[in-house]
Amino acid sequence: MITYAGKGTEIPHFNQPTSVTIGNFDGIHLGHQQLIKEARTKALKKGYKTLVLSFFPHPLWVICPQKAPPLLTPFEVKQRILERYGVDIFVAIEFSKEFASWSHERFVKEILTERLECEYLVIGPDFRFGKDRKGDINFLRKKAGFPVKVIPPVMVDGEPVSSTRIRRLLRDEGDVGRAAELLGRHYRLFGKVKKGDQRGRKLGFPTANLEPSPRSLIPKRGTYLTKTLLNGGGCYTSVTNIGKNPTFGETEETRVETHLIGFEGDLLGKEISIEFVERIRDEMRFSSPAELVAQIKEDVLYAMRVCEAVTQ
Image (cartoon, rainbow, N blue to C red; front, side):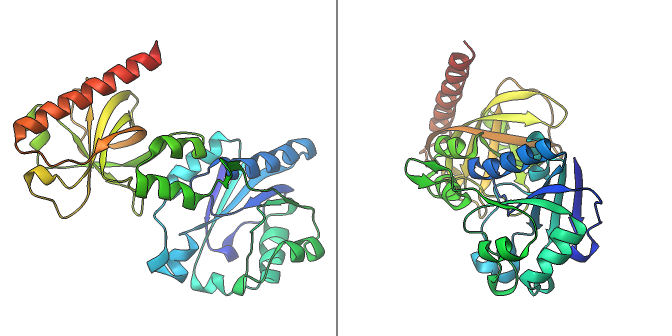
């Protein structure tokens, strides 16, 4: 997959017809996947390249930072997932106040037509673009000069699948199982392992203390059945706690600490990803370290039983 990330005025001229879909694609959930599927189907039929056009950072981080959402898929993660869905070209335009001032006419002419050579455009029903969001479906169909396909939202349980809905499930409810249904895969946190206070090791359950990619969404505080994937290869059943260690006096920041069952080695400074499978329990304050250890043992045994049942 070819990837370009930079200013709109610096996007290269691809000199080949493309089937394009546009959006933030945060999460690349079931709805996004439908857009990509339609663009790719047309590309394969016509001999075009499948192109996904997105923006970084999320526009709200520039326009209204206090309302900007945490990310389900940081940029590097988005790249990996899009390639998995057969995208040929991924273009991420740097979103700035200057770019936000572009008119909708300029965006279509300079980006879609001249640089990307769009021959087919796939969008969702609420897509708007350009200064003051004046560009819409009607404008595209009248003025763009290429066919525009509008894909209706994917509905699950009577509600449209959306990044906002998935964020609510993860951050407010900790319902990682339901979020996985809307994403089409388990939610993952990526990052590097940083030095912790070594308390887990002293308790007999060493943990990797994750520093997530910047602006990543961290699920609701609690304990989760997870799978931890190592950058160099290897996947381990794990138990991950998200919280502030209330048993030992709350920490200032929320920590993401995962115990990899059966793993021996040093992960400090290495990249890992944590895949959230199931919420086990809420965060708890224990009366003693011994009581905490007993609960951790139960959590680990539960994780092992679940994973054993899945593999049988």
